[in-house]
Length: 257
Image 1 (cartoon, rainbow, N blue to C red):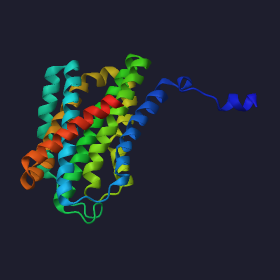
Image 2 (cartoon, rainbow, N blue to C red):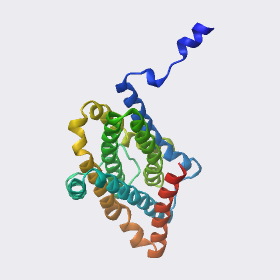
Image 3 (tube, helix red, strand yellow):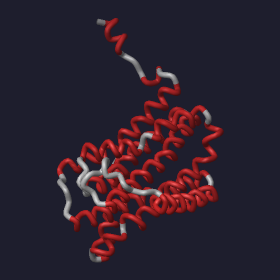
């Protein structure tokens, strides 16, 4: 029995540093999928509720972008500002030049919804690149700091998963597919955590640019894709209230978690 217990008893600290980084970064990605779980109890929403869901998602993403700017500013204000501007320009170019015709993947959706979903998934994936670098760089500084940062990012990813799932579920995507798409947007975290851990001097200077880029892209997606229809079709005060609810939800969940 003792031999059996000793064979199966192990500690993550016994793993190589690279495997530890990969493990914790993978957990941060999986945590994003948890944001879809509340929607197990919500069926397809009406058009009016879909508009409010978009406003709530915008509120969630705006708070996330503000936090990214704050984190990037600590690493380098000018590079963060450059990233914000570049992120907005990048999204404008993508919107202008890419044809959002994915009928085989998103059956039953109109072109506007497909465009919105594609851009939001793309922006959140882009956002995860900066977080992946952040995990790797933090582990390069110390194991304890790396565990702290990866835990903070994992908890931060849950409300981001909610923002993604609000947009998907409100347009008829199943909860489980929404969870998988949410996890997909966070796959850059484990993919970039290991290289940035091994090559910290190469990746670290790009961290504020990445955070600013993700923040700028999220702000653009909020005001270009998520909010125009709600403001056009619903009372302004109701849309603003939904946005504020999303903001408070993001802040409250982060404080709670």
